View (cartoon, rainbow over the protein chains, first blue to last red):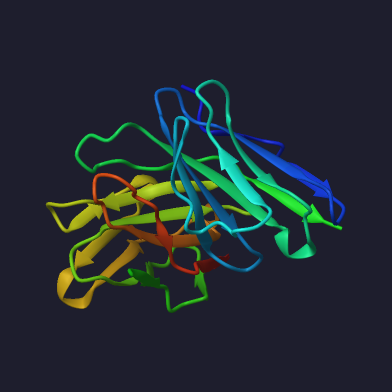
Length: 116
Length: 115
């Protein structure tokens, strides 16, 4: 069973460009979480999605950031018009359908975004 | 809202020595508690978790953690560290409402091992 996959692993963008990050959850997992890790900091929650639904986007900046998890294909985190402050590691985690609360999140290797 | 405190930013121990990494959480009820490890340039690997039951939890790689409700703590321990344990360690909590179970992380403790 393959783990959570993220691509690309490294992404370099110039200011004003768009960044598109992909996350394929583990097989059988229908819940996806995105977290951001700024340099020298812990991970901060951004958004929680289920298939075709955004459940909680309270940690995501209101502008320029969007996320989706379509019925088919990976979850996408999209950052428009990137700025230097967007440089960070973005991690995706997946978990299985709820079965009474014992639901561990499994993390992907992350995408390291550098904005020049 | 819940919060997690890891008071030690950086810890250095000798190989073979014992280790304890501190974690305190702030929440009225008992949250679900996790320890993750992150090697440089890598993602997070789950070491262990506490949901309920026995307050002493065994994890992978010889790690264990003890949940102490009275102290709101969930400290990570290992009796004898190996050079390969050098990494960043994150404590995290989630308050499960059988819906959104987003993790709240501490700021991490960087572990350095010296020969």
